[in-house]
Length: 419
Image (tube, rainbow, N blue to C red; front, side, top):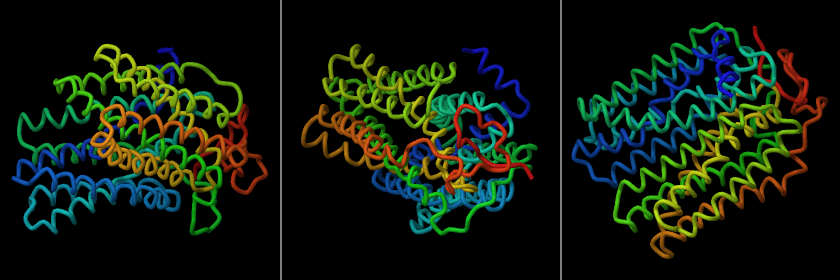
C-alpha cells in the first residue's frame, strides 16, 4: 500500500503540487478557529466571532465556484495567485483594523473568504497531466482526500501553537503568508503554467448544466450535513460525560477512521463504474452513522466514531472521479469547486440543525441528524441513477478533452489539456 503512494509522490511535480496545495489551503482550513481566537482577543463576544466566521464561510462558498470558472477560462496562474494575495490582504486588514469599526471587520472577512483560491479543484484538474495513467490518478484522488483529513487536523493545532507563542493577530498573519507561499509554489510549477481547460460551450450555468453533477452535489450536501452535525453532537456527548477531552477523542477517532479508509481505498484498483461504487460506499457511510445514536460509554463511542469515519475519505475520492466524468467539457475546475462549496454549505447547515436537536431531543437526537442525513445522501444517489449512469463518450456533457490520453477502464474520464 505504501509503495503505491510512494510511487505517486516520486513522480515529477506530484509532491510539490500536493504540498503546495495543502499549504495554500491552510488559511481556509484554519480560518474559523483563527477568526474566533482573534475576535475574542480583541474583546469581542462569541456571537460576534461566530458571525464573522460564518460570513467568511458564506463568502468562501460563493467565491469557490466563481473562481473555479475563472480558472477554467483564464488558466491557473492568472487566478490562483492574485486571489490568494487578495484573500491574505483581507485577513491583514482584519488584523490591522480589529473589530472597530465593525463594518470594516465584516468587509475584511468577506474579501478573505470570497477570494480564497480554488486550489483544491485546481490540483485535481492537474493530476491527469502529471500522473498520466488513470489508475494513478484515482489513487491520487484518494491520497488527496486523506491529506485533507491531516490538514484539517494539523491546521488548527498550528494556529493554537502560533497563538501561544505570539498572538491571535500574528497567527492570522503567519498562516495567510504561508498560504500565499503555497499558492505561489503551485502556480510557478510547469504543470500549472501549462494547463488549459478544454474548449467549453458558452453557457451561464457552466458546470451546473450537467444533471449528473447536480445529483452528486445534492448527495454530498447531505454528506456534509452529516459531518457538520457530528461536530456539534460530539460536543454535546462530551458535556454529558463531563470531560472536554472526550470531544477531542471522538474527533480524532473520526479522522483516523477516514485516514485509514482513504489509504485502503487508494491502495487497490477498482473494477466497474465509479457511479455504482459510490452508491455502495455512501450506503456504508450512512450505515456507519446509525449506531452513533446509541451513545454508549466513551470507549465504545470512540470505536463507533472511528468506524463512522472509515468510508468518508473513500466517498470523497470516488466523488472526485464522478465529478470528472460528469462535468461539462471545459468546466472541470468549476465542477470540483462546486463539490467543495456544496459539501461546506451542508456542513454549515448540519452544525445549525444539530443545536436545536440537542436542546429538544438530547444528544442522541443530534446524532440522529447525522444518521438521517447519511440516509438522505443515499436516497439522492438511488433516485438519480438515471442521470448518474456511466456517461457515453458522444454525449455533449462528457466529450473528452484534447488531453484525454488515458481513457481505458472508465470512459468519460478527463480533465483539461496542455497548451
